[in-house]
Image (cartoon, helix red, strand yellow):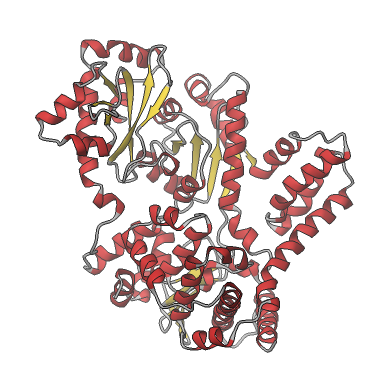
Length: 601
């Protein structure tokens, strides 16, 4: 039995949810006011029989005990598993990425203390003076554990060896570098040191700034078992609580920007460490709050970083909406959307400068930040020569998929904005958007309609009821990368099991199995290996496509049939369902009819 299965066997969803919401009996279900949003009429139901929950109000989502606690506590999947395992008295076997990297954390902690002490020495005076010139207070310096790496090539090396740390371990931690001739030396020398912590406050790596003319200006720890710059956000360990409580986070570019923000009381700020915001970083932020503001430097390099960040963030945040374009009931499965707004900083004013010298302007800019697409549409359109027909077409091609993936209620306003940005007829722009939508729908329908499964595949599916069907679908996707474009409008919510939902969601943003493994904690990595080693159907590609289409269709069908009962249970007993629920019931019934008609083809 997996850790996740054992957690579910020991923790009853009714008992768990009862600590967050006042449940009342309603037939086979229990109802309550949703704990995730404000409402007057209960729209939140729990099914003791299926050990599941669903909100039919603003959240429009549901799941099992893990997904509930993840949402309630604003934790990612790995953190939720560890929390519930502890509650259930389960010892997690195997070692997670962070546990296997324990020696690295130990070495990094020793190095951080060494650098802090070195900052107070004579050689560190120049770095101290630099911090003073930048207005960094002693309290902020100590809170962020800022330090200095001596220029001597073996200063840290000698210190670690004296403490009994093997050279090879220090090299693996990234604080020592081994030359081609086998000689080891300190990786950081003569630099202002910024320890980079993980969410639990452990030192995962370092950022280092030159305080003279040395190049590169900034240097980071090389990738290790516990540090990957693309997955890390500076100051997240200090900002997490504020982001959760304020339901909003602010993302800046550099270490000094984040330090200034925290020094002056803006403790919901994190930094992307001078790079474009990556999909992995967005993935770390999404469970914590629904709203984020991107406030990067206004210079040319900063604007380009902003654009790369927005394109990357939109892929991750809008991915689920895009995947649902082909589904006629997609609106029923939308989670509370994550929004990114853009704080357009004035020329010559970076976040550090604004926060220190004009805090009211900083507060105004971050509180009135423009929605992502309001900023992105004119910026992307400006990349092309829209005075010519070809430029207009290129701009349309770049922006149309983004608008198509936006909320339907917002699309018309964005079409107007795009038409104005490229000086084009609104009807032509709208037609282009509708074409993008039709393409998404066609991709969703093609596997089931045009690629029939072989008899072998159908027989294999028949032997895999319930959650085994989920495992079979994931096994096909993991073993057959070519099937990635066959998922169409399939929603993660069609999976019952939280670990399958999480794997599917992570798989969407990881182009290779190796990259997927690298972002998973041990329980999910073990599940991936089990799925890869399973005796899943091993026919040719065409047969696999047909088998997957059947899997996905049956999982969606199961989800919708369960949803029917839940929708009816969410209404008041003895009274007709309100109009909103009738609309949802009709949408579910319509989609089920489509699925059953495909089954007979």
